[in-house]
Every structure is written in structure tokens, then in C-alpha cells.
Amino acid sequence: MQMEAQNADPFAENPAKLQMSGSNSNDGHSVTKRLQNELMQLMMSDTPGISAFPVSDADLLNWTGTLTGPEGTVYEDLTFKISLAFPQNYPYTAPTIKFISPMWHPNVDMSGNICLDILKEKWSAVYNVQTILLSLQSLFGEPNNKSPLNAQAAQLWDTDMDEYKRLLMQRYEAPDDE
Image (cartoon, rainbow, N blue to C red; front, side):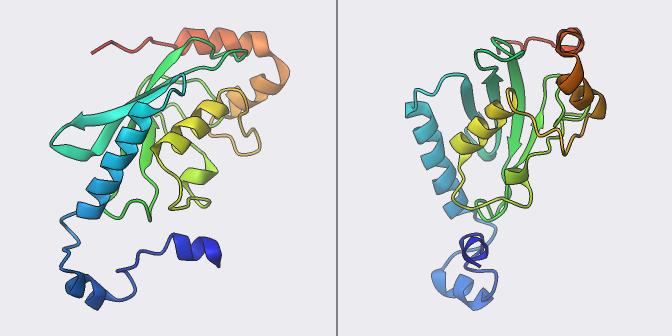
């Protein structure tokens, strides 16, 4: 029940509140303010291997990010580009995140779609861009092979890490520094 309460859009159940607040569901002011705060928090963080920024100053709902594989994983020192699309009702609904860079991973399909519970059924409005990026980065070392989008990668992760790494490197493309 508590999780449902923190994900509840305060204006969804009573549209009259929306009118009284003087807000317009299309203005996205609270979403913009939240994303500006999250951007500042991310920029001030010294967390290695993660970054994300809006694609343009005029559109805070679409971001691009990078994730670098952590030490001690087959992804170590590899950098991947992702896209983050925030809905108008963020943070009550999870953003849509996809790998733009080609990715070989049990929880990522060949189109870049990601299977991560906190982006689906376990989403909570308390999550932010930084926690999402850290969760994605942790997948590099700890995939959920019980829920794979790439069954071959999941099988190789468990049985043949040399072949896994070979296929990863075959698919890997370093992102352009734009």
C-alpha cells in the first residue's frame, strides 16, 4: 500500500485539485523542476562511470547518458550510450530507457530494450536519474538471468564467459564523443 501511495499522481484521482492548483497537466512545471534538480544532483556527484544530460536545453524530457562498465566485470572500461525519455507524469511513472549503443547482455535485447524491475513493476517515485543509472551499471556485473531478454547471453553468462566476452566485443561499438 505504501509503494502505491508514493507512486500515486496527486492530481490523477481528483482532477479538481489540478484546476485549484493553477497547474496545467501539459505545462510539466513540476516535472521540469524535478529533472533540473536531478541534473544538478548528478552533476555534483562524483560517482564514476555514469553521466546523463538533456539532449537540448529546450527539452528536459529527453536525455542521453553514458554508462561505463565497472572494474572486475567483462564490461570494464567499455562505455555505452543510453537514451532516457521521461513521461509528463514523471516521477509517478518510470522513464523509458534504451541502449543506443549495441549491447550484448542477458537483460537487454538486440533493439536496446532493458528488462529491469525498477523500470517496470517495482518503479517508485523515490527513484531518480542517479539511482536508475547506478542500477543499470550494476546489471553489468549482476544480470538477472531468471528474466532474460537475450537468452543466448544469459546461457553463456552461466556457462562460457570466454564466448560471452567474445560476442560482447564483436557487438561493441565505442560511442562517438559528440
